[in-house]
Structures are given as C-alpha cells and as structure tokens.
Length: 330
Figure 1 (cartoon, rainbow, N blue to C red):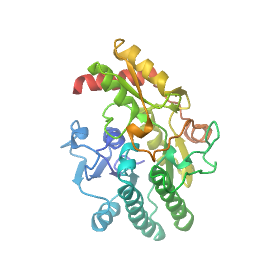
Figure 2 (cartoon, one colour):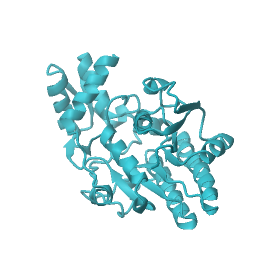
Figure 3 (cartoon, one colour):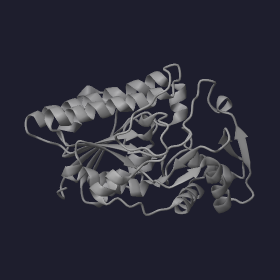
Figure 4 (cartoon, rainbow, N blue to C red):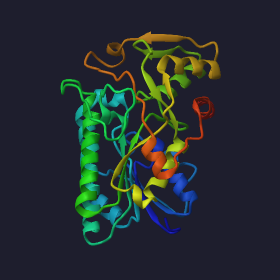
C-alpha cells in the first residue's frame, strides 16, 4: 500500500477495528472510521482520537448516503461492522440478520460501481468461523461444506447471514474484478475485548480478577482455538496488500486447540489460583433453543501459503495480555 492511502474501517471503534485503526495510522495512512457504537466504544480509540490522519464518524453503515460518501474517498476498505457475539445473536436474531447483510450489500454495491469504471479498491470483508455451522469434520478448510441447524435455532442466523456476505463479496470479485478478501475469524482475543456479548476469555479473566467463579457452559469439553488480535490484524493488512490473495476466503486465527474447561483452568493458574469453576447449562445461559458447536479448529494452510502467516502469541501470552488490560481497566 502506498504511504498516503486513505483507509475506510467500518466498525473501527470495536475491539478488532480499533486495533486495525492504530496499526494503519502507525503505518502512515489516513483512516476514516465509521461506527454507530452499538457494540463498539469510542474509548477504544482514545489513544488515537484527535490524530491528524484520523477521521472519526459516529454513524451507521446502514445509511446509504454516508456509505456512498466514505466509500468514494477510500483507497482501501475494511468492513468489520457486524452484529457481535453469541449472546447478542440469541437475543436479537432480526437485528443480527439485517446488520450483517444490508450494510455489506451497500458497501459492495458502491465498490462494484467503482470497479466497473476500472477503479479497483482492495477490500476486506470480515466473516466468521460460524459460517461452518456444525460441520462434523475435526478441522475446517475454506472449501468445506457449510452445515447449519434448523431455522428454529436462532444462533444459526449469524452464520447464515455472514455466509450471504461472503457470497456477495465473491460475486463482486467475479462480476466486477473487485479485489476483495474474505477473512473468517476464529476466536480473536486480546485487550479491549468485552465479555458482555458472550466472549469466553475476557469473561473468564474478569471473573478470576474479581475472585468470582468462572462459569463454564455445559461440560466444558467444547474445543476452540484462540488468536491474539495483534497477530490477526497483521494478517488482515497483509492479505489486503497481497493482490494474489483477492477473490478468496481465508481462515484467520490459531490452529492450537484447547477445551473451554482447560481454558478456565489456565486462566485460574495465571490470574488467580484461588478462583473456582462453576458449570451451567446452555438453557440457563441462553435459552432452550440454543445449540452449540463442540469443536472449532481451522486449517491454516491457505493463509500460510498466501502471506507466510505465523501467529506470535501463544495462549498463555494471550491470557496475560487480557489480564493486564483488565487490571488497568477495572
């Protein structure tokens, strides 16, 4: 990317978006952040708010006029704005579907029109491991089938709506030559992430710091992989700046599995050895319609081949970074 690029980040006041904003500013770029603060927080940008190369707009990417204006000025687009977290999805399925699909359609429509005129804007569309649904494979590759549960289970609305985003993005690449990259995030964690929407690691760390029980859903045998936000941001920037990566989908995260019970035990060991673990049912945590995924582990071959992706922070370092941040915040 040239040194004077203007980068648009939707959801730039969110957990991942704020880290991306700082990274791009540090690289010398101009950044336009659009965020409606529905799940993001302006405080996440406190270190850079007022920066001469940052334009912060509190607004929604459901606003056609606003989207048209900011997309026209962008040399790079990073679309991160979306509904966030399993807890929010279970409670607000209509909002989840609308907020995931409509803004993506607006943004891609404007980018497609620019591309049709020969103005090709490198673009990143944030997706999620949720699109794999409950595919029974032990590890997931980008070309694997998407396996969703019944429409009576609201949680699947998130994965399905993000899958529509992916279809839209890839169609714009095929029809207009838009250089778009789709990134499926797998449990991105780190400083500034809140446990308010069901994110497990910040929730565990906060409980341990407060001396409260770490609440594990079901039996805790669910398997996940956790990646530090700094490693993920580096991957996002590299993918968008790699022309050969365009028009493809990439798993982004860690491929080192850990059970949720083991995660709780490691948080206790590193943060507060006196803390205890408490188990609860999904019905009590969410509602009777909730359905979970037992194992979620990505294959990272494609992203390694594309940009030589190598995460630098292991799980212990990630836990420490979240705890250090929360101790400074609480």
